[in-house]
Picture 1 (spheres, each protein chain N blue to C red):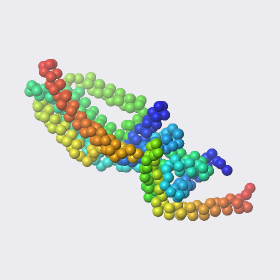
Picture 2 (picture 1 turned 30 degrees about the horizontal axis):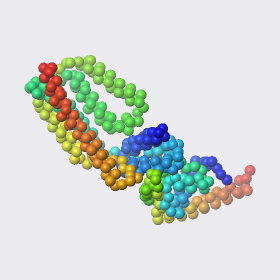
Picture 3 (picture 1 turned 180 degrees about the horizontal axis):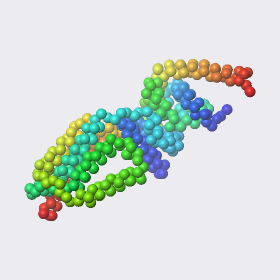
Picture 4 (picture 1 turned 135 degrees about the vertical axis):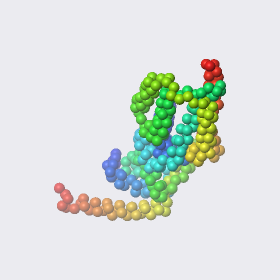
Length: 240
Length: 114
């Protein structure tokens, strides 16, 4: 049991590193099956036979350049998230023709998202390799900055905008980016394929599951909006 | 004479050739290659050294791979020497014999003896 758990942990780290090196799913599946085969044959533990999983993944020499569509994918996801937030934020006031009041804190939050998320997306390898305490420190610093912005800017309203166009614009942005994600070649799933899977039917079953996960991942913000909008409208009416 | 482990720099220089040689009789899998090398007296070759080397040989077109169903266990990845791989093995074998001959002769000259 312990051996299996440590083996799986080692394999997970190798797979993660290969993903970060932009290696395709078929090759990753091949590398994982090769390790499993060797460990079953030799009776060794993964560290003993292959050393550090990250170093081993790099030593295979399969690194590929960043996919060309990364910028488009990051921008689309960011815009989709922004659309979701605008829709949920403006839905309540829009339901009874009130304006949306944007405070300094809202602006600080928007800037944090617009700067922070691309920063993470384009430095994903470095972010994933951060030690837990380093990630914790950075997260705590970002949170402290937001709290400071909240305290300094408070409830000061910097703009009062019509809610309906913001809600509709946000909804369209969310739907548009989700549809783009659905049909864009950049978002096509690249599942890890086990070359030792017993049957083609098994492989197809696994790829169907991956396709569903990919579909739900792409549409999760729309599903979230469908749930959140009625809730925020109801809460707005309750408080109004 | 059995050695637990040869100097790493020697192994780095000769391992590719020895792996190609292990594949000469026919297709075989990683652990069998490692076992053959150890039986030949080259010491234990870990998976972390062997598979990146096999991957490079495959990328260079010297070997091809094929997954075959295992007997009750996981499938096995078989490595097979290509025609290019066989030619490379013959070329390196010839070079290695020439090189070791020179080294051997050098080590046996009178002026090099203490």
